[in-house]
Length: 438
Image (cartoon, rainbow, N blue to C red; front, side):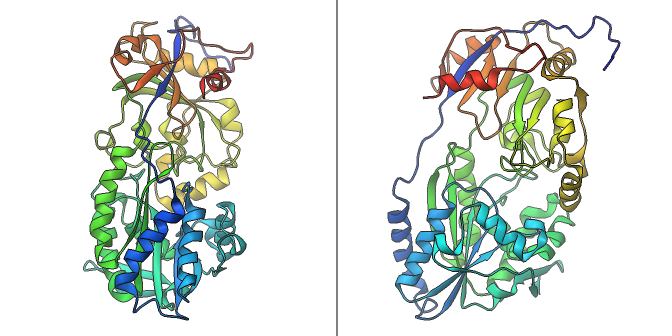
């Protein structure tokens, strides 16, 4: 690559300092005991629906919830203990290639099989329209779940990556989109993310009235992805409690504890890390025009670079368009078929855009720094993270030292060091941060 630039690529860079960000460690130590307690409370109001021999559908989604296997397994254990026949229903919109077999495979990848949870898994994409919202939006429910004696929805409640509101990602989204399968996903996404908070609530009200939903099991995770709160909620409280748990989730959510960043270096991105590859609640950047950075409490970032795709994302680079600069290595690893199928289905085409592609990590960083506004190098403020899930151990430029020394939740782990690159321009911070982890 030959690019003629006045002054070339060289930019003076600040030294980097390894730090540890400490977050709220609230977590449930005994998952089984906690689920047992929630089930006893739940049973008091639902005993008439949970009779011996009744079939209860457990709706499980596709997201990487840390404790999803023990939670599902223990809920099934409690149901079977009172003579109920539980079955697992994949509730994941169009994921898994929008096929029943594909969605079973997604559950298997999460560790959920008939053998591991002790219940049959029934998977189909067939749905029935059970009603319409006041604005005429059809509400669909998967047939096996609809024909059961009761449905319990399981999902994590957390900030959404494409929009902000009183309702984001949680039980309501699982009911409207997960149980609605591909048809449910299509009718919601076609209306735009800006309609989602009100739309998901309207669709849930219809589903609660027209289908046998008897409860929702909500999980809130802490910054370390462990379960901080698990509740088995009565159907009449699902909407209200989903909103309350979202606020709790936002307080526990991890973040970069800095207000202004000139360059954010994201080592890797991928679908298993976040739906859009890099969580906008961390970066403040979303391909969706309905996402509001200030509501996510994310730092203001001038330039962002991403260096690699994870192996697990299998070339799906959805969300790459939120970065400013990337590398040839990442570009050549993109599976455009999967990426474009993803962004077209979501209707957020901006997520599939390609940023400026540079020869290697060093050039990418130099270009990002060179294009920062009102920065006197080497006084730039830089942050390196492995990915948007790994925010405990990170690197920051020495220009932040005076700020972070005043923050009791941040530990400085080492001395400032020159940014390390290999001879062929590969950044070496990913391996160096490992030595600081306890």
